[in-house]
Image (cartoon, rainbow, N blue to C red; front, side, top):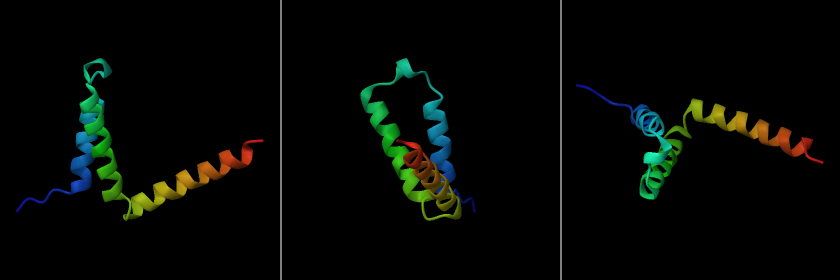
Amino acid sequence: MLTINVAVLLAVIIVVRLGRRTEARSRNDEKLTVLIVLAFGVVVAPTAFGQGVLDVVGQLATGVSEAAP
């Protein structure tokens, strides 16, 4: 039996979609890409990897907000 990790499948789809030329994309194509990326975020968020990304982004945001005058 073959099992496919949904997060891996979405990541592959994102890489393939973003690898295409920008000029060839329609507005609906862009919206679909955004929806796929959001779904990927929802799937990855509860994992250890997602929590690590959240921590890094949080530290970056804190650093930027503290550096701003």
